[in-house]
Length: 133
Image (cartoon, rainbow, N blue to C red; front, side, top):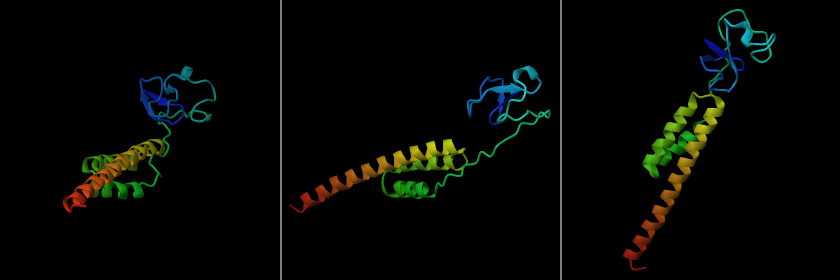
């Protein structure tokens, strides 16, 4: 069983960590790590337990959540629901993944808003033509 040198996550049999891209090492194999390296340059402990860092997101998702709910209720429901899913995925994710998910939600909300504005313009034109204006 391997662990990442950078973040301490289990990597299984992988050579590189799938989260941070760091090299992995095996606790039983002392030749896989040069002397004095690992986990930010600190000496690797003899204990087989990896050191875990905090992975919860500190990114504020409140504004995007509100925008996604309004988009779902008022604009384009399918895109709003997709944006809500990405906002909820961002809540418990690591910060870099949370930023990525919020970026996708932002794009979906903008597309939903554009579709809403176009439909308003078209419906306003139909309304004016029905009054003969």
